[in-house]
Image 1 (spheres, rainbow, N blue to C red):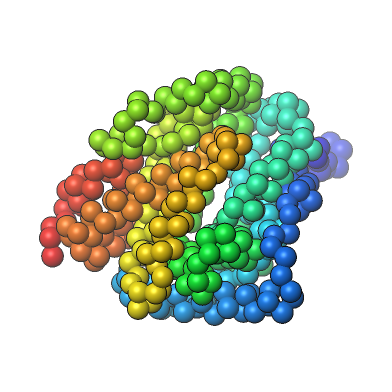
Image 2 (tube, one colour):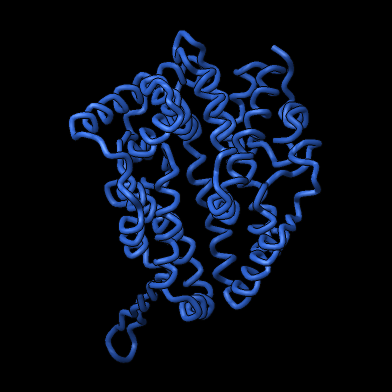
Length: 392
């Protein structure tokens, strides 16, 4: 979409600031995703309605368990956020709108400071092309995501102040059928993870704006360097295709190494030390959030989720059965990095709780300065020492 300029009257009145170009056609992205994505498992309407009602009930039941395990008082009152049971197309549309709202402030500020660079980026990129590409990405993700807490939907007109939790019913049903597990147990297990994210942002109301600021800096940096973005993207692709991950020395994720999976690809897009530092910080925060949620979902025992051990075992084994094409797509999109965040973050949380208790760990939600660094994610003792915590 071309930028528009509001002109004042001839002579003295200055023109209104330009609206920043829309670098991605998000409406097209949502439409493309809806067209490309299959609807999901075929079931009688009565069963679908029953599953949706069951998910809604279990999402509420899970909050008490999250409160008991995390000891976060924020879990007592989540009225300013909402829970939605959605299908794949609805998930894609919601994410397209949130992405645009998240990136718009950075683009607006960049357009004010460096309008020529934004115009250059818009000229070099076709919003229709990038909209179609983003639609394809959303389509793939919409068939994989079980649930998502979106803190950024509050930026949208009428969006809930506390964010929105979406449970993708077709995907949850598809996986529970694939794994042949007890549906009610699996649904509650998933809800425990996703509701934990909702509670995290309620416990740390500053976290949304902090993440927006960090993501905005990265987004603005990429647009501002549009003249080299294509070259860097090609270099990243070559690194991926050759299998040379700059962060992979064959040692896995141990030894305190900064383990960011497919970021041999992603990191090639961020060349400045400041960009790399921001990306490292975002990686650490995401590892914390995902790991903490995984700890909560695995902390329940058989009295809450009777088949929890079977679910975890089969869910973990499921990743080994992916085909070569899906593995490649997951790698290029950074989903392998996300999977490692679950593991690395969970190790950090368990190590901290073991040494200083849950109350000590919960210091992480008080302020941005308390968030762990990427190095600390792999060495919990460093974070404990920096926070000056001791065993309770």
